View 1: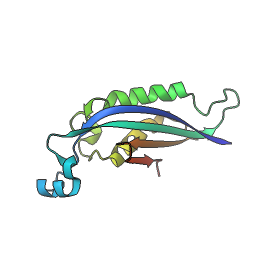
View 2: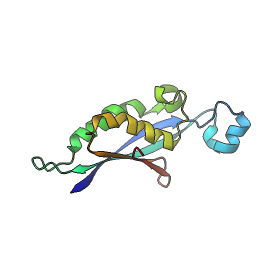
View 3: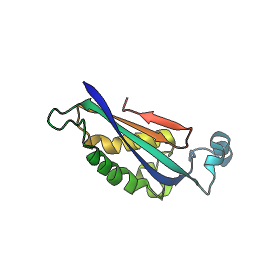
Length: 136
């Protein structure tokens, strides 16, 4: 029997969406206000889910405390109250869209989740705009 367990977290971060190969006009046409040279911020909500078999000895798929600590150490410490474009090396050459942020988060967490468990990251950029990435 496979069960999904999830942990919710959040971080606040600023970013600017732009393609360095485009003109300012093209960036504004495609990304609108999100391409502002002065950046803008979001209160991101993050849900990390791990799916797997229940361990018969512990009753856990994964100890939520371990998942909580992983998110705090590998994600919140790196992203919270940062400018993603300037402060997070993963985005030096990568546009920090919600899609790309979710993939980066997944890649940072995947090495710490058992191979036999599935990992899913859902990132809310706003209450109505969110993306989900599960490695496929």
